[in-house]
Length: 478
Image 1 (spheres, rainbow, N blue to C red):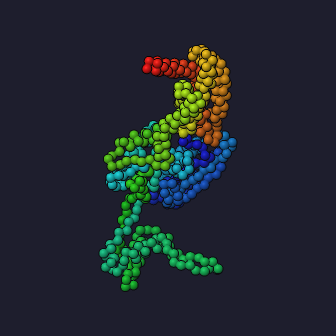
Image 2: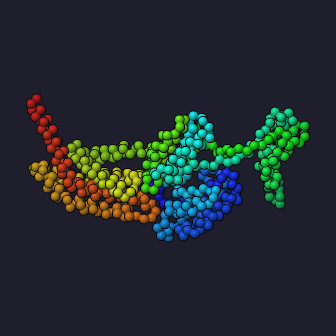
């Protein structure tokens, strides 16, 4: 599906995992100031602490709505997204990705492709992360791909509390008591409700911020043992720092890392996905990639195209066979269909468009339109043939008589799709795909049909008469 302008775009702001909310807020203010300078932007909504990659104080998400097409003066959502992303590249320690929404809602979180790199041999997160970094680096060096990145929260420093359980039990402190003390002090805990001026309010306990800001303050948290004595955590707990992932994903049951990217300008999504598959062939043993979201649907639906085209041709052929009560005449009509499809493919390639689903709709339409021109000639040729004229004479006469109706109907239809080719505004890519393919197919199908349909009709009928003559001769001999 083409990435249509839906009137808004999304931006994900990601800072290092240790970044505080204040650092994120400073970046958000720069983002909002840049958006405010854009005349095509109508409104912008920022959400702090949330992103498609995950939640945290180092993440933010924005939804930027553009003005109506008439007030934009030709500005597209893609161009605005590219401008915002390039302008935010100068902000240190912040990664801003501005993307269009997916072509189909609920099929992914943004436009582009979604790829999961899986660890199928249990080699661990670090090995998976190393392979993912190498794959992303090679993908960004490819001319067919752009904006390929790992879609997830970055690794960050983690504080680990190492509890000596044997020592704690010897002092009469259970592990449950330790866990509860840490949870209540650093987080919060609901106690009960009370009535305050006629309103029911909750009682929630938690250590004040100045007493839970540093790691050593955690070790001073008091815990009561079984004898009622108060002990501090430092008696049986020590702390250590480490770098660890902030989130762990699984896909199809395997540990995985999600990779998001887009096709380079002028490259179709199918070509971009083929490039990713080619890069994934060099992955170390034990690692494999899987597609998800709209990318997976695109792969599954692409295999249905040959069958769909064959079914469309078969339906038209059967209808013509029932109309003429003959197998040879529909065959002569259907031979003209490739002439129209050739023009559609050439038109799309010349204009640099992609082979999307709407172009395929145009191809199916051309099957009936191409057959229509052939029917106009063959129908009159059959009537003249029934009047006693020779095959060649009937075909040539029918071609001359039906030349003007063929040109008039084909020209009227071709001119009717020109507005689709030149459309500008909402869903213009969809209109371009249908209009360009049908226009090119009508031109080639009309010009070539004038010369090739008579040839097809004569050849098929001559071949049919020869076979019929042989059958009569054999029957008479018998």
